[in-house]
Amino acid sequence: MLTSSIITASYDGRIRTYDLRVGEMKVDVMAHPVTSIHCSADGKAMLASCLDGRIRMVDRDDGAVLKSFGDGNPDPSEKNRGPIYFNKDLRIRSTFAKGDSVVLSGSETPETRSSGDTTPATIFAWDVLTGNVIRTVPMGTNIKVASCVAWNEKGSCWAGGCSDGMFGVYNYSIDEVLC
Image (cartoon, rainbow, N blue to C red):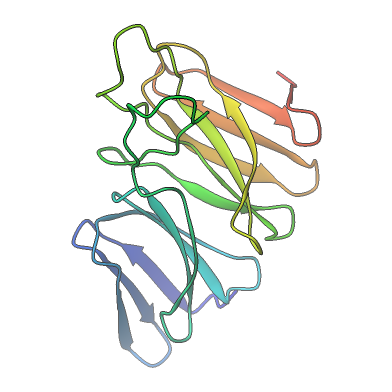
């Protein structure tokens, strides 16, 4: 990745890239508040977590959206959907994993869920090429948000942090909690 640039994300829906060598700024517009930005290992793409319930993989050169992950905040009252990726109100960090072949992100628990619904906040993993969900890990009942994920390439494990202050470290291949 280029070390001569600074990338910022903003609630105004803009991703700003500052090139420190030439003193220029480039702006990419996502049209929804951007709460997190993360670059790929090669620096050619970035993940933008937006409050419309989507994570966009954006080309750093031209700002084109290469792929979108998430359902765009679907109706949480739909039955039998399984885990729902939901991000409407809170900052959720997303990251690339497994050599940039996977996107990891936490999610919010929808406030509008029906009474008695105990669907927990969930960590999602999507295949970068297909955009399909390849794994979900529920973070526990009464958790409002799984807000942060981090990937360790050498250890092939990831960590997830939640709104209750707890975090877990997981082995990617079997979702085993390591600590």
